[in-house]
Length: 372
Image 1 (cartoon, one colour):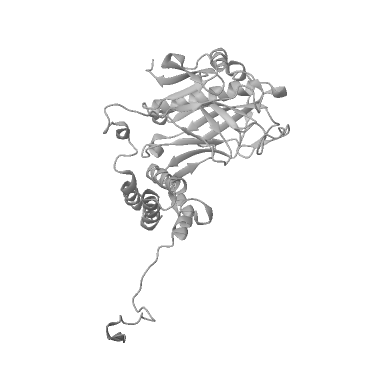
Image 2 (tube, rainbow, N blue to C red; image 1 turned 180 degrees about the vertical axis):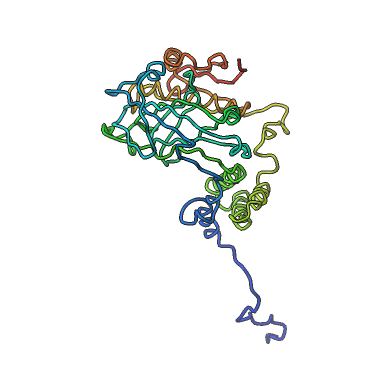
């Protein structure tokens, strides 16, 4: 039977005169790593994270006393010693030694009242703890430029109103994991650290909120299974944020944040996220936990310091975020804290005991219950 070719479809066009676009997912995924820091820091989000920085002696006065022979004096002893002037760039060591700082911060209201937040950025390259002038631990510091870097101290509103603020800092010449530069190799007994920053810093809070929006989107892209609807939505939103943002136009920050709401919804970064809109009771609780090995990659005395740093930081977070809860283990550490840091705010705490599955230690779930 003969074929009838008259009804055949027209031949495929050799050329496409119209323009088009094809989504190259790997390119858009690689692109989002360029939004903060790196080679393009002068034009990406990193260019607007800070509104102002001051480090001159008109704003920051530093004095230091180095404890002799690797000793670990407590606050009452250290504060009586003779301190000498210090400055950024000074070097301190060797490993495991402790150095105490008297810090005076000048924040004239006429210069700083306009800002939502003013912080003191203190980075000794190692771990440290900030005290008030009465010896109460306020928060821990983790120096250096790793992923665990925490070097910001929020200057209280009362201090900004007064125009001057005094704090005491104990810096300890060890890192988060002792003296290791990686793994659990033998500790380096001769490490030295330098004071990299001691600055009054004004963060652009809207820019930082956008940073955390974007970081959350990146984590969704990196951790969700490939080519799932939510991963693709997070990736396209992150790229759209980069298109909307303009470092010369600060109003673009909030427009970019509105893009993130396509993924997160509205009010996702407020306390409203804890309002139960579904089941009549919560089925899952997420509680922060601090398991500090009492003896691992550092001496016992460093464990004592790490405990005070970690737990005082949690109390600071509870002060700012009342919904925050925190669990910690090792009863011996409670004892050390009671003995060595007597002004620590135990009267603010309540505890619910549970069992630490790793070491069969008592764990207390901590919540802030009030102030006096």
